[in-house]
Length: 241
Image 1 (cartoon, helix red, strand yellow):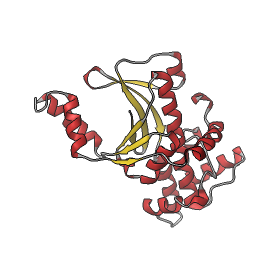
Image 2 (cartoon, helix red, strand yellow; image 1 turned 180 degrees about the vertical axis):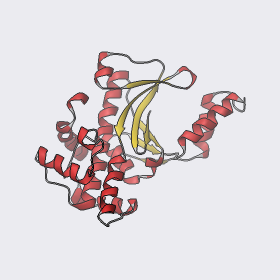
Image 3 (cartoon, helix red, strand yellow; image 1 turned 60 degrees about the horizontal axis):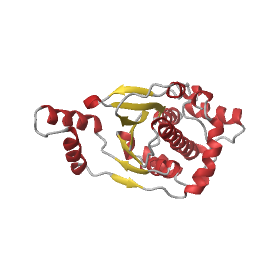
Image 4 (cartoon, rainbow, N blue to C red; image 1 turned 135 degrees about the horizontal axis):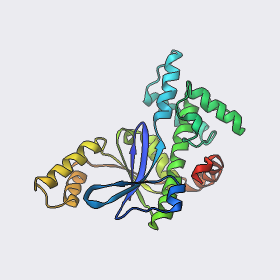
């Protein structure tokens, strides 16, 4: 199982017994972080909902204060599907003055038509994030030798049902969304272990899983997403390949 902490930024990785320190892991820019109970978290930083937050800020400055639910409803229209794809980690999206203009400029540079309004921009962001998650899942498989079949999404981004479904569709993995307050629950789990309230970390994790049910998303329309992934790979930054 992989985990995805989804918020302003995305952290996608898996828990392993020991660090993987190879030329390939370095080239792919993966991090080995010390984890609980002597484990290692092999993960990669990815741009997250920052792209949409920045777009909302631009639209608000123009007098259009869109709520997230509004944007997701517009983005769900199939007419926006796969019109624009990009690497969310492109340097031009790191901290532009105007994210909407930055995306439109990227489209001009890559020969793509600019997204059609807020719904089109939102759809392009979510599809591109989902495809970047697939790239990282494939890289985790390559580095660890283990097939990833499930992705557990935690944090505020786990409430984005459209992105959750796109992530399942793009990766071919079952997505388990929740809990939202994963950081606080992880702290609680360690306190349970430290005080002897439970006999192991696994025991604490099982209690949390039973107490905070997740929403499950299964892959759909895999052939369509697979064909578009090949197109997405053309836009990956060279440092990722």
